[in-house]
Length: 413
Ligand SMILES: *[C@@H]1O[C@H](CO)[C@@H](O)[C@H](O)[C@H]1NC(C)=O
Ligand SMILES: *[C@@H]1O[C@H](CO)[C@@H](O)[C@H](O)[C@H]1NC(C)=O
Ligand SMILES: *[C@@H]1O[C@H](CO)[C@@H](O)[C@H](O)[C@H]1NC(C)=O
Ligand SMILES: *[C@@H]1O[C@H](CO)[C@@H](O)[C@H](O)[C@H]1NC(C)=O
Image (tube, rainbow, N blue to C red; front, side):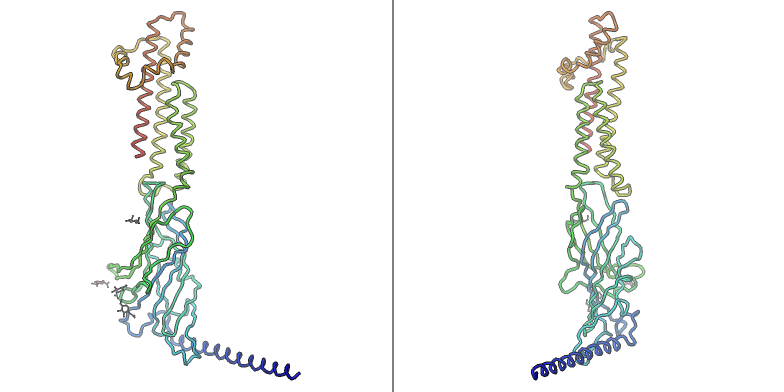
């Protein structure tokens, strides 16, 4: 019984002491905040002498690169801006305030440096105005601010090498109103200006981040600027499946067009299929990267030249085929000078004219037979003329093939 009473008394005693202590702590904090904020002007620089420079250490912890948008040329980064500075009016003696060494303030209660991204592409919506961040101040007046920020800056993209391109984007931070003599950005003690991205981006690899602080001399004021340079390169593995593989398929079809006998319906089928794939790729690219970038993208150049060459070769061989077929009905001999050149062995060897003629001219032969059926006579001279016309057709086709290969090689190198 006595034990229980003693225990209870002890418990009540401890509770009382704790309550008193806590209330004491609470009232000291209240008093401290009241004392510090009394006559505090949050709109002027917290220095006792106007000539004093406030050194603000700047760090940018990149959380994630959210996007690099080709069409709007903007770079979207999520991160934290870490600032520390000394506030000469937020200094106290901890022994007078129950040993309190650190106080939290709301962003709107005390002066904060007006550091903003200079090259912002999203107007003046900065982290500073809408951040509900708390600032911690120690008794020597050092203020620590961690400002979550979602920054959109403009980034001029050069897509000449797309999709094998790399881009360089800048983030520039500085004070909006204070010049370098009033507010100077400095590196923190650790010497770090930035922290690498915490979360990886699915489209871009971060190659390198660098940064430095410099003074920008302009006509109106000299300002201290922190510049962070981010080199990113496109992840090619995604584009391999989206662009490269369909493109290679279409190019292969483009080549196959020349291997199919002239006049065969498969020429048109394969050619159209290749054109269909290429036009779709072009639309996808236009939608994806837009028209605003510097330089014509490599992929777009390759695709459009392929479209042009395949179309030309389809049209030219089919037109000449039709023309020659219609000529065959009357069977005029080839102009003698042309015929003479066509039978030239060197030419024949270069363009593989003769060797292939007998074996692959089946299509031609079939047509010849058609004509011979229509026409009761089939003299050897008209047969020779037909052969000459077929040779000419083949020569035109070979020339187109060689042009296709040469242009493709030039454009892809
Ligand atoms: C700011 O840094 C400069 C050196 O860069 C130093 O001379 C100056 O005293 C510092 N100002 C304050 C208020 O600490
Ligand atoms: C600003 O700080 C840099 C160091 O970061 C120092 O070299 C420079 O002299 C300072 N400028 C002024 C005007 O205090
Ligand atoms: C900027 O700095 C230069 C040299 O340090 C000085 O001559 C000039 O007056 C300054 N400009 C302003 C607007 O303070
Ligand atoms: C980053 O990009 C800039 C500008 O294009 C270039 O000068 C620099 O060499 C690049 N750095 C790396 C590591 O690629």
